[in-house]
Image (tube, rainbow, N blue to C red; front, side):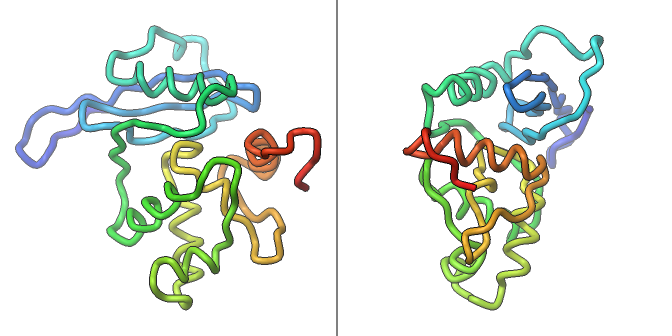
Length: 170
């Protein structure tokens, strides 16, 4: 995808597909940072290529995460969204590895308990899964709730991050 920044400079968004234990991730970014990390159902053989330079660190850190060697990401992020969505996504990044929170707690931390539905909607539109850990948000009653990557992946990610790997969270 080719884009122009606000100074009319050509910005080339690069893409790479990373195969993981729970499916393939489509990783997109440019020199401004990581744009998206989403699960995809199918990767065409022609889409398999060398890791673009601007995505190498993202791919390295995600690989370390899935190998159990990383619990925190240090990447330059550049997701596209509204100011409110970006505020929610920033709040999501504060949820520690191995911990969960509820949509209600998130709304409270955002300063208004009444924005629970808006916070949940912004959470669902998070374009950078895993790194912006929207999978760590669960229902107030402890139940699994929606996840754009599928509930089976959310369950896997939460169990993978659980400090007690011998027990199932759900």
